[in-house]
Image (cartoon, rainbow, N blue to C red; front, side, top):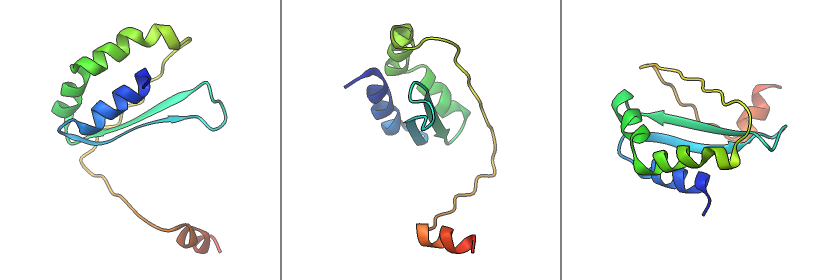
Length: 93
């Protein structure tokens, strides 16, 4: 298991983690995006202080080159919608 997979596996099991995913960019496979959602700021801090996170960050120069961008959103108002592909197709008709 690689660095990314190990980090994601650990983070998904951490208390306070709602969602934690890593995804390769569809237009540029050399880009990797992390999507993280926590119950609160304390849970995010626990993750950032975890040993797997620290190991990942230490190894980052081995496999990442260039700049790293972080976009952070904080909100208490989150809405999740679920729908099928058919529902989505019908919505644009």
